[in-house]
Image (cartoon, rainbow, N blue to C red; front, top):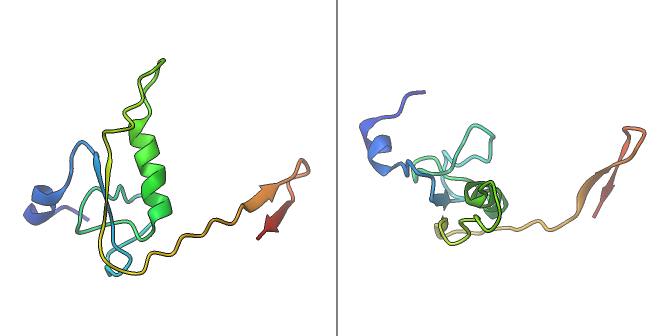
Amino acid sequence: MGLSRWDNLLKSVRGNTVHVDPNSLDATDSVENQGNSPTRPFKTIQRALIEAARFSYQVGNNNDRFSKTTILLQPGEHIVDNRPGIIVKDDDTYITRG
């Protein structure tokens, strides 16, 4: 889907502002979403943190841009799931924790 003029105006091209809005109908944590537009925000804080970490990584020593990403949270109920998740074993089976 192409971007409208409004999307182009609002989109953070450099990716240093990440938007989270759990109440938005267009919010998604899908891999295709970059979360850098308020018209297509992330649904969860976890996804925004992953993208912020990805934006901050630079090759080399002492190059992290840790102060260069802003996560903009819209009002709403933000649920954080801190369970460990899935553990993959050596025989390609998995167990869930939590």
